Length: 203
Length: 203
DNA sequence: TAGATTGTTAATCGATTAACAATC
DNA sequence: TAGATTGTTAATCGATTAACAATC
Image (cartoon, rainbow over all chains, first blue to last red; front, side, top):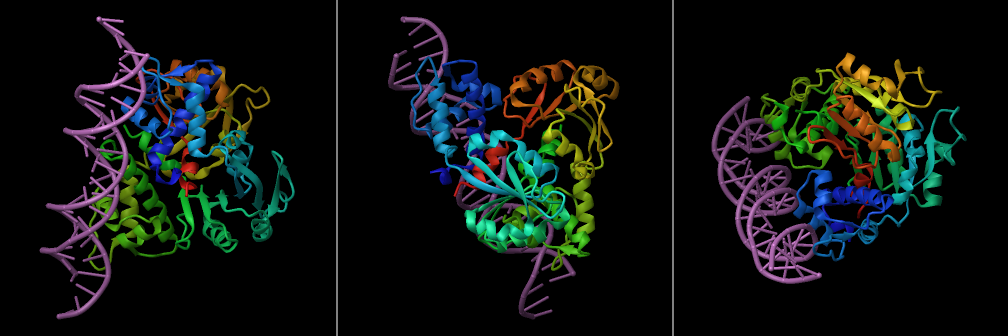
């Protein structure tokens, strides 16, 4: 399954999927490993090797069937498996992510937001309600949520993370710049935007 | 310089910096490679090897001087070198990034936004003005901007990217899900959020 | 056929980890 | 001293690239 595919391969497959979506729109029927490799500036044999994971066959001289490849990437990466999440922090970034409707195409399903600002409580953003943070534990339990997206201000991030742990959240996608201390069983993904920026502007 | 440090090392050094900022707040004077490695769940010799790039000396039995290490990472990664950018697309994500004041600590300096919606033109967001996209070429030239953050809707991303290229932008930080076709000389960084998400929730 | 493309193996490259002497 | 830590080398591991037979 997915768990024995490397991070880098998953990242690349997601990018191939973006290209395929475009090809569908443009009504192109086939795509070659070389076309993908040139768009992403990677090696074409890398692309072919990644595609072997999809268990589909390309056609020599022609390439891969766009619709078929797209579908099998979706299956491999589990786009059709709904992954329900809560967003913690209804600030600018929390709202941006909530309004980002593309997420649902990838199975990422935002169910609700949490905040402590009384002015925000019970407002509706893109059909999702903002709850007071004190309701978190109860709702995590009732809705069986395992994943939280953390978009609170960095200075309170650890404190809120402690609440997430107590509420039995298993995965924290951390958009703050605080490195969180959590028990071994909790999985953290640090979305390190500045790292990406510093890397790509380094020359 | 930075250009011969690998992407992964830059990413890690940025995370070390986040930890050090926290240590400063907590008034801790020293930090060991092991403390860093446990917070980030990586190997301690990896941390020590990365730190050798900073050209500072740790103290045996004690660790590294927090303030000194923090400062030398900032120097190594060029946090004090202002990198001026324009944000293209004053939607939710564009606004979220504009309001994200931590960026300036890393040298990322947002100067203005661009959009085509008449209701947004000339509004001020976090002290930055929104200009009509037609003003882009002129302002890029006058302000000598090389970097653009692309946060427009994906369906128009290629079209807008073509304008960025024409305006002489050299770096495009792409937050859309469109894989852009640009000349060889333009550098693109695809901020692949879904890839990160699918990777970290894969088990 | 000639040529373009896949599928796959072997070679290369680079990143991570293990190990340990040196230090205080 | 004993023990904790750095700095660094060598070993391991994994990812990328090169090469090319097979296919149509």
